[in-house]
Length: 183
Length: 282
Image (cartoon, rainbow over the protein chains, first blue to last red):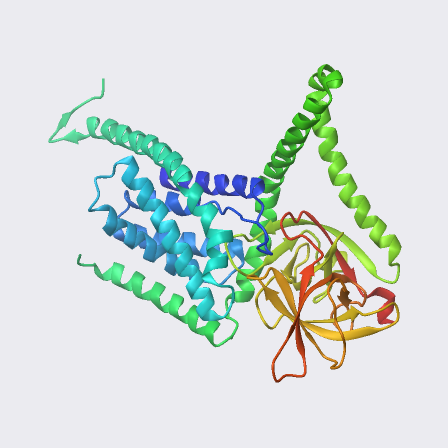
């Protein structure tokens, strides 16, 4: 539930920022695409089992596809790929804030670039990578570390809350007939 | 890492769905779920707009108004104290005034071209995360909106209706790079002479529409006005599209490439108008 609330909070942040940073469909000005939901999903994935991770990637991908009215099932695959990448990449890192911020920003870059090439392959877009990078990716990646930093802190609070709840439950567990009450 | 049976099944299902979706896209076949997804998009957009976007947009408008107010305050020292006292009220007034002006401009447009039917609409969703260049507006079949009707802002044509629900509609913008989104246009060479052309697509690299001239031996120069011709049977004629910016001769070809600067701005779409052919159809 707390994971769901965390991702919903990220989604609300995305909506809020979308109101402040309008998208220029004609690519005449640089624009920012908020990635809170995506980064939130990545951060939450650490607390999930592989089965839950697959389920979450699929459900959130479908929601993203339906909300954006784009290509159905595209976000599912992309989310899953990025989650797997994050999970196996993060194992080799210490999980410090700097590493997490760099990792999340890198994955935003990788995801956006992969989507660009996929859409290019499908013939949906014909612009060059240069235009895409300058107008769409540059500001998005430039501001992504700030978003990642904020999310990392909020995620820390969430994890602490889950831990304290777990400790409380453990303390109240009835082990071998002995009740360890939380005082 | 070794995956369990259930994980393997889940992964296989996702892989099948994603590859199926990509395959259908490559083959340009509409997914059987697409209609359901479109309906979902309309519904969720409406819910999201009502619950979240509307309030956030009001905050954004208020923030913009406040920043404008700050400049005015600097320039008008004498009125500073009064503005400070009325800041909260003025924020609201200026915000409403800005909305009012936009709607007024749309109404003026309505008075200018009485042969068209106009329906004003608010943009409730801008899908920023896709390249589909689609927006959703808060008018639908119950407001008389039909497929393929033109959508304009106060500055000119921006797109056409591609799907209609009862209370919402999707608009495919002209900035889409989908080459199937062609529009019949005409270039005003003089007050009496027009040259027919086709708006092929939007060139994001040049940030201009690419237009192909149909009639040979016509001299096109920059700053000529481009508008819809109405010949494609989709759009009414006379809707402003843009201004010729660059003309490029194509070697060994009868036609020439014309780059047209869009007259409409695509950066902050809040209010639009749906134009139907109205009496022109009769």
